[in-house]
Length: 67
Image (cartoon, rainbow, N blue to C red):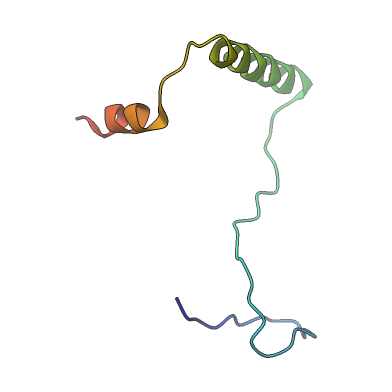
């Protein structure tokens, strides 16, 4: 895919430089307790997957597409 990047600040990138553009997430509004709860949930989920209790992503996505 070809395109042009227009910036509002001077750049020293040479013509033809290839860049990967990503959305810059500046964080979230979680407080310490919410962040701890999120990290605990992620850890539990990861241990569950490691124990063999998981589903292939394709199945999950297919389920999400169902009305």
